[in-house]
Structures are given as C-alpha cells and as structure tokens.
Image (cartoon, rainbow, N blue to C red; front, side, top):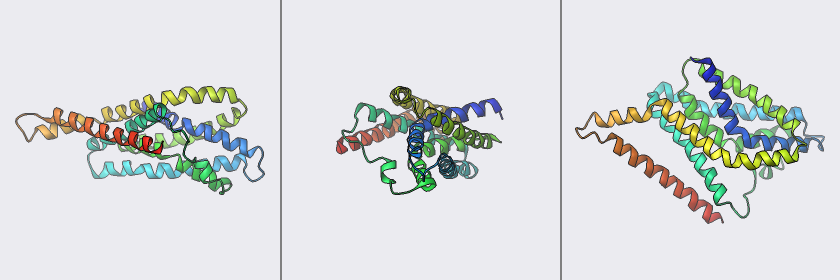
Length: 242
C-alpha cells in the first residue's frame, strides 16, 4: 500500500464531496449563535453521526469487491462523472425557484437529529463517490480513507466555525466552487475508472469470444449512449421543473 497516495486520495475525495457541506455547517453555526437548543457540540456530533451512516452505506462497494472481480466494479466510477455533469447542468440551466432545501424540509427537527439528517440528505454525492472508491481499495487503504475522513470532518467543522463571520469570503468561495466542482467530480470519476482498469478488462472479455475484436467499439458506443441518455434525462428533468 502506498500510504502517501492513499492519504492524498482521501483528502481530495473528502474535499470534493464536502465543499457544499461547508456552507451548510456555517448556516448551522450561525443558527447556534442565536439558539439555546442547537450548540456547536451538537452540530459536530450530528455531523459525525451523518458521516458514519454515509460511510456504512458506501461500504457496499467494498463488500462487492469480495464477491466479484474489482475490474467491473470500476465502472461505478461513472457515478461521480454523472454527478459532475448534473452539477454542470445546474449551472447552465438554473431553476427559477430552487427546490426546498434539506434544511427547510427538516426545520421542525432539533439539534443532533436535525444535523445528522441534513448531512444524510446532502450525502448522495458522497455515497456515489465513496462506493466506487472503496470497491478499489487494497490492503489497509479503506482504513486510511475512513480515518482521514473523520479527521477532515473535524477540520471542516472548525473551519466553518472560524469563517462564520466572513460573509464576503464565503460568497467568493461559493461562487468559484460552483464552477470548479463539476470538473473535479468528472476528474475523480475518470481516475477511479482508469485506476480500476475496467475498460481494458472489458475489452479483453469481449474480444476473447470473437475474431473481429469489437471490444473497443462496443464499449465506446455503450459509454457514449449511457452518458448521453443520462445527461438527456437530467436536462429534461431540469426543464420540466422550470
């Protein structure tokens, strides 16, 4: 196991999937400053509970690696790519009226339960990214990922608390993060796919039963069709909501 590489992957994947959560945390800490029920300690506890559930759900990918070869599981790397495309669509075709946020939906919940629930509702991107990543983990890499995620969550909470009053800085970061995130998600998905060697494996599996070696063509058509179909569906969904 390349310890340094594992830490680097853990740091980058946590940052990519939790940039949005930084702004949610700032909102919670701002609320805590005027609420006797919601305290910084409860916010942190709720965040750790939410992250623990997200990691548990993402372990599905790690479990799959014991049942099937790791190469085909690498195709799950398409999930972060689709998340990136979805975020790009949201930038270019924004809804006139944003859907009700997770915080709005859970406004009646209190303290730790509220924070944990919001973390889970915002955790779809995390699960979609961690599942294929965990499926490719080797040796002790999975432990490195989890430990780094827990440490980084503490750093995230502290950073959100410190920047709570820096409104101008938050607006600036939020503005540029929105444009950067789609590229980061797509890059992460490509990294997972390339690292798993799922495409060379699939090409070899297809070609070994034929004499014409159609593997590359079949995979190219299948990938373009799948991504195109999903992208079209996402665009249609956004247009319908407008």
